[in-house]
Image (cartoon, rainbow, N blue to C red; front, side, top):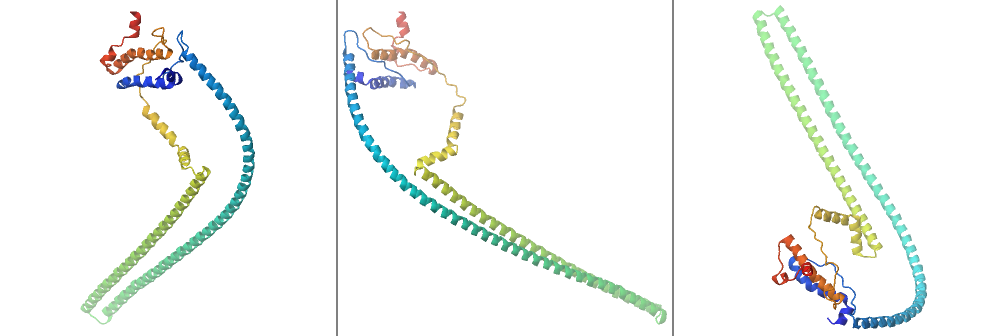
Length: 369
């Protein structure tokens, strides 16, 4: 770089110097984060930088005059432009007002139609519930009628069984009476015994017949009970299936309504943000606490770290010789900071600098000598 380039572009000069020094520091894992170059001044007997400064001041003064004239021109043009924009904005606002009024009327009609639709849906739901309740009532009535018929049959069977038992008792008493009469009037003792045995055999046969009928009746009752239980279980399963189907239908309607509401919500946000999808994404992330969660994760990642930090400086930045400029002083200061920097690197990592850099003298030792 020439002296004029250094004077006009101190930042570029600083970057070029730092890049060359940084190349040597990269092998130690060190970075230069900040450094400054002071103002460049002439050495006694030379006025090069002074003339460059005067040149820059004159150019700035001339440029200021040009800027003032240009500002006046822009002011006059801007005044006329503002008047035209005022008229344009007034016309635009009138048009937007009419558009908004028309939109509001349309939205009112949409809400009215929506309310009527919801009322109709509710009426249909109520009619369906009433029809379902009537169907349940009819089923219950049929079940009650069936149970009543079963009770009537059971009652009739019980009456018939009791009648059979009473008839059996009457016949037994009649048989005994006839046996006694025969014994007393016509038959001998042997005949009486024979008749008695016959009557007993008949009685046993009758008892077995009645027992068989009772067992048959119990089997019939058991079969009827099992049939009633099966019918009740089938009805119960059918009711459970109907309830689950109705619940699934309601759940599907709820999901559809939720999806529609979310769609309207996102569409409204997108319209409010001018169709900017990136702004909509940022809003949803902020509203959902995404950035707070990211900050929390980052805080958890660095928690408990204990880095070793060493602070060192180049001292007061004294000049190496009496004829050097401030820029050269800064460069010399950087090289003067290298020995303590290498020492710190060696203490923390055990790494040594290249042999050619190891020959750099320690500024403190050189000063002492």
